[in-house]
Structures are given as C-alpha cells and as structure tokens.
Length: 298
Image (cartoon, rainbow, N blue to C red; front, top):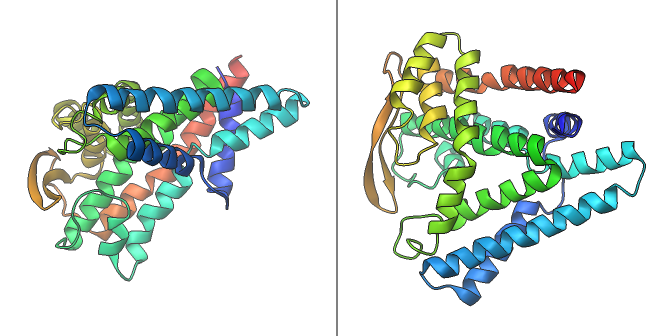
C-alpha cells in the first residue's frame, strides 16, 4: 500500500490544485481523438483496440516515470511521483468548478461545462440539482477512485484509472456512433468504479448530519440508475441533504426519465448546494487522517 505517496499527492492537490501545464488527461484525450479519426468503426473490436492501446501506452509511460524517479534519492523520488500522481486527483478542481456556479453571472453556461445534459432550458433549480449530482458522482470518479488505485498500485494505478475514466467520458455513450465502439470502455469503467463508488457513498453517509436518512436513501436508491455505480454517491448525498435528485433531464434534445433518488424534504436551492460543498472539508480531514493512520500502522 502506497500510503505516503497517496498522502503527499492528496496534500499537493488540496493546496495547489491544477498545475499550469498540459494536463495528462488532455494528452489522453488527444490520443483517443487521433485513434478515433483514423480507426473508427462502430464495432466492439475497434473500441477494444483503442482501450487496449491507450491503457498499454499509459501503463508503460507511468512505469518508466517510476523507474526514472527511483534513480534519485528516496525523498526526491517520492516527491516527484506524488506531484505526478496529484494530477490524477481532482478534489480542488471539482470543488472550485461546482462552487463557481454559486457566483457565476451565467450559471447555465457554468453548468454546461460540467454536465453532458442539455442546459439551455434549465431553471435555477435544475442547475443546482445538476451541480449536486455532478459533485456527488465525481467525488467517486475524481477523488476516491483515483486515490483508491493510487493506494493499491502506486503511480501506474492512478494513471491507468484516469485513462479508463477519460475513455468513458469520451466514447462510452449509447448513441448511434458509440453504441458498439464505446462498449468496452463503458464495461471497464463500470468494473473499476464498482468499489470506489460504494466507498464514496459510505463516506458521505459517515459524514452526514443525518446518517440514518443518508444510509436509507443509499440502500434504497443506490441501484436505481442505469449506471451500476453513479446512483450510490448521488443517493447518499440526496439523503444527507434531504432532497430529491435524479428525475427527468434532456440529453441531445431528448427527455430522459431517470428514477428519483432521495427524499423531497427540502427544496433545492443555493443553500442546498452550499451545504453539499461543505462536505469537502470533512472529506479532506477524514482522508488525511486515514492516510496518516495507514502510514503509522505500517
């Protein structure tokens, strides 16, 4: 277990956020786009070749990075690997991006940068609901998931995980273009996020003021969404806040009727979103304490 590496990487992301350089995910995205332009066919085989090639390249580069950094003294090797690993953690960026909706002069434009659903006709409640769902779901994809695989496998683990996430975000859609081409990416993303999504939901429950309601909503509603994973952190957050998430939303011009998650005890407004974002401090403290305990236990 890479507790020291994970602790330092988390502290770097928490204090510094994104570095002013090309993010590795951007490079992964360019690889996916270039492959798709050259080899696209809406067939499972072509999509699987894309997945296999990106994961292979990502793994090789990360292994080389670990090898080269280990040529330096141990403290420098740890620091350099932690800096690289921190680019796979997104707590700082995620929180800032969602919080920006509260102060944006054009919240509809701000939320359009975070979600794939249509935003043109959204009212204030729709915007805040989308922001809540994005915050809850991406606590798994952007924080707990990468931290989980960093702890297990070090820098190569978080690098491969981010490659899988990037593939899922770009090609894993049930649209005519990607129905077969993106199937391998979608299945692999479901598998890798199975444990992190449930750990995220349990963390939200543990930190909720009303733990019983958060647990009940997670247990009752976590498996209602089409995704086998996204529903768990969203349902836990809905229960923690006493609101109802999910429901109808427009995607690519078509209304999609999704199940509702949580309980409509309170209305969704800016205060609700502020309460949800306040989980960041509690999550930061909890994760840092757990990582420190892990180091002491070794």
